[in-house]
Amino acid sequence: MLGLLLLAALAQTPRQYDAALFENEYLRAHLVTLNQIGHYRTEADTPQVVYCLGAFLVTRDNGARRRCSPDQVLFVDRGDQIELRADLEPRPDLLIVELKQAPSGQYALLQEDAVNVAPTVYHLMFENAFVRVIRMTIAPGEKTRMHWHPGSDLLFPLTTARTRTLLPDGEARPIDLQARVPRWTAAAARHVLENIGSTEAVALLIELK
Image 1 (cartoon, rainbow, N blue to C red):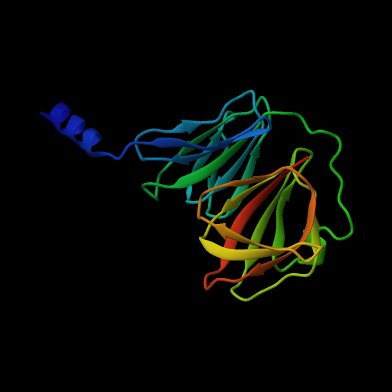
Image 2: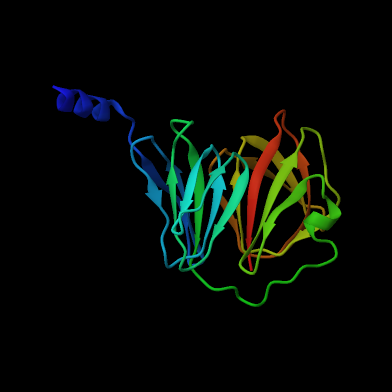
């Protein structure tokens, strides 16, 4: 009887999901939703950025444990693995970006880099030899100064918002951001970013080195 009750409880538990979002020759991004029954174990042979959209428990192979809270970034190097489990929050989400290539050695920053020119909009969250992770937040009606991005970056919007980019030649291009729909930019670029909508534009920007 107890076994039947346990099976019934398991059958009613929402499944754990791993949904592909974007992939190219440089990276693979996917969204994982945990549950309180299963767990997720990262790949051992691929460096990965883990962005915590919810709160969950992280266990390393050496037994060390920590909690990942919303808006925190973890980096898992090649050869390392971590196990992710839901505990207090029943269905936490997380973004995993697997890096498929070694750093190119061509990454460089200019003085007009976005983090330098517009630090209230572009906040540096994490940086190492592989990536730079930036949180972008721009309020309705806000407009940055002209700034520069090095390219080879993945933008992961956290909110749905209407923005506009103004190029050095005066051209204006609308950019509609959809929450959790990533955008890849290959080339370096200069622009002014403006929020022309009524909602705050928040996104995670992952630059590959």
